[in-house]
Image 1 (spheres, helix red, strand yellow):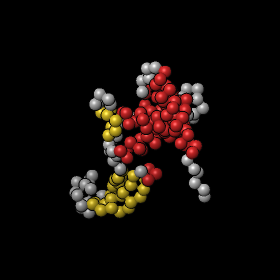
Image 2 (cartoon, rainbow, N blue to C red; image 1 turned 120 degrees about the vertical axis):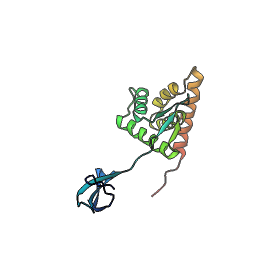
Image 3 (tube, rainbow, N blue to C red; image 1 turned 135 degrees about the horizontal axis):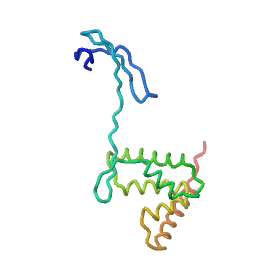
Image 4 (cartoon, rainbow, N blue to C red; image 1 turned 45 degrees about the vertical axis):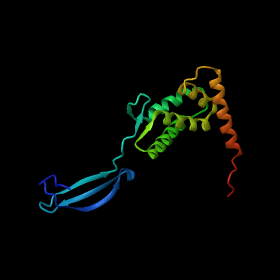
Length: 161
């Protein structure tokens, strides 16, 4: 690390501690040439997550877009705003595990899968917009998917402790 006072590269760490609730490390340093002390912060640099739209255009991932879509699909439903934020964070975490780029289709299906567990009516509304339903049979197909997922969930044995 270069000294801000004399620009010498010969500095040493005097003290290190966690900062910003563990999101960074604060280091006190001392310059070997001029004895000047200064502070540096070390932070994790996250790779930006990109969503590849159907047109091929990459755009930054935005949790707020998911939350907005969820709140629109869930109007009048008994779902708390915190649940939207949790769902969006879960989708983002899963997307990061996929790599630095995911398709908009992947994001939409990930949201829909999680929403089916949270609220069936909201999932049907979301699917109708996301998948661009054009007639009643599209609703029937999606409803059968929701019913199947619900049956699988009920049939899955609960582990005993």
